[in-house]
Image (cartoon, rainbow, N blue to C red; front, side):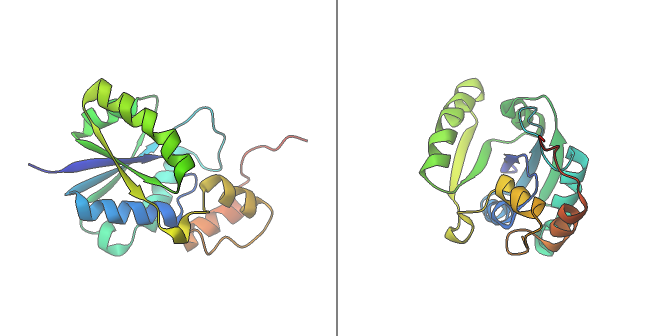
Length: 168
């Protein structure tokens, strides 16, 4: 039986912290489905298709070529339904600290209640603990260098993306 997990997120944009969690999940599970989710409450820099493309192009070669990591976009679905659709028995979430953990635990309990899917929390690397997609977008929007936080392909895309509309 294939041990399959889902690593969900908006990945807008994908950061080195995300890639670290995906790589670590790939050592724990036979297959990792990176679920690019659409959150209508968030306005971001990239549409789902662009985020899938950037993730695929950002995966380290060892992950990209083995077929053990799949990147798929899902819209208007509960995470538990994504897990059912792909046959995953677990959700893997990276947590940077207590704030992330406090936010994620109630969702993990709800997902387990609804479907029996377990959530595995991976402590984020201290190297990436201060990095979030929203901060990367903000910093990039002001023309600052984000190369320490995102792959080059993402940095290039951020430099050409108009990003979300800003209030005047």
